[in-house]
Length: 275
Length: 275
Image (spheres, chains in turn cyan, orange):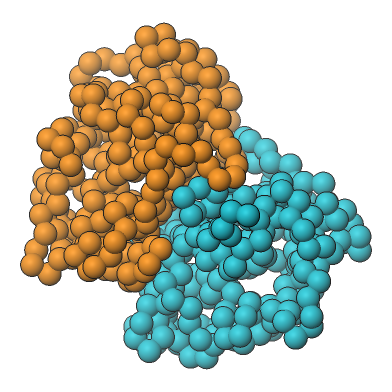
């Protein structure tokens, strides 16, 4: 834990029971007026899960798998997180986590905790990072009027490769975004922050079809390794768009070319009427 | 709901509150002595979620996304499922589901319910089914002594393409299984049964390295369409094996070549000591 904004914004204040936490949802991590970013909320829940598992005697310091449902968007300000530790295990520990505001469930998650390594190559399997142009040749996600830029863009720097069509307004049709990710303040990534980074960019479906907002119904993140210091590269791909739903897969690599996080999400998509 | 064994084995008997269900875990769907198959348990939870959402006024008949944590293996016999409906929505409804036995949580899930179509091609994106040899040229997963064949193999027919190395005892090293799936009694697949089928075969990592049992820490299933009648084809691939964890991705296609289900799971893997 550092004194960087991410650490302050994800602070959890435990009650005596070790499983209830007061939190303050920070207005600097929103994607719209009073609409906190989903990855930021998941990082908050993950930090509470880690604290509750430690309080229950668990020895796993990292969230290695998280599933999350966004039920209703909380407002910025005070909220309460409750963690139910289902099992403290030797390899992994398991918990359910709910964030409530005014008594209503806003976000709920299943968290699996484990240990993670840094550095070493995988024992088997490989996933090479995408070719991404240098950061100074990349573009911000949208050419937006300053007043409409989400506040989270001041905290998380997202830069897209020039090949990503819709940075200039038009979907390219490939359904693939790729680029760089880092904290704007230079804080290095850690396993907890990968929960944030997996949900820190616009929908990959925006590179297929421009729609209204695309709500995430279900998000799963696996954290696979402790990231090396430095910027992250990501690839975010739309899968199948059918029946009002789309799946999207994200992968993140660290500066040592190691795959450090994977995510998949199911989103609801309201298509424009046929032309 | 038919009178086939799958429907009987996933029956849920509601209490008056509409959210608590008595169930009987059927010994015919196990993968070891008194060890129910994880996909079967997820189908049980899914059926309870559908019943509870309907009782709460929701109009979505299918589980379209499910995340599940296996906390401790329940025994066959009586158990109780409790569903908390978090939100009844227009497009989707959301619920948490827990299966308990003797008061202890055994399985817990997040379920998202929606409507699904059959038949039509995706609006965008494609995923072609793998080349699989005809069923009569495929092999059962293991050459096992009859007494050790899991009971679920009498309910769910899994046939692997001849290219899958470890059907004959040796991993091929590709980490990919592909083959046919169907109910042994000829019942056609429906959306609920896809929750079963996504976790109905041996670990894909067995095609990389023979280990002891590979526990699923976290499983996510997306159901994308109502499957057409007839057998299903599946592909199950290991991703990265690192730090004691492996990810595995499964896809299932119906007889009309449509991708009907996707799953991803994180498993714990204890590797053999280096030779």
